[in-house]
Length: 92
Image (cartoon, rainbow, N blue to C red; front, side, top):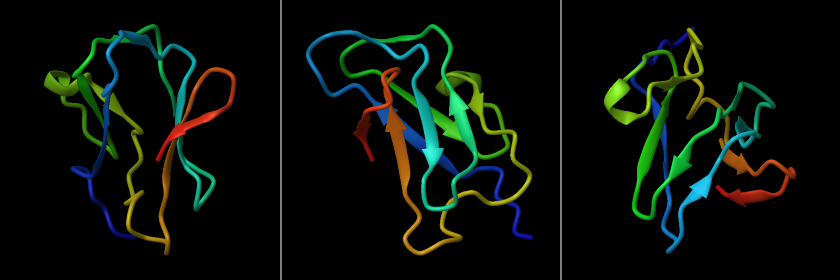
């Protein structure tokens, strides 16, 4: 198994308004898992957070899948998808 603790997906609010992402989920749709559900968090316009494979980086929001193996770049294609609380894919 490949271990890539420093892999990450970066999520940015490119809009003009703040967005609360509570209940949103980030999923590796190519493999069906892992999935991370976000707590009550508001992203201001221009704000960015990262979700790491296994590490926590508080300066980037402190989000981690806590997954001991590589999540990304192990399927072709390997797609990260962000779903809002209604289940609509908002970006990938």
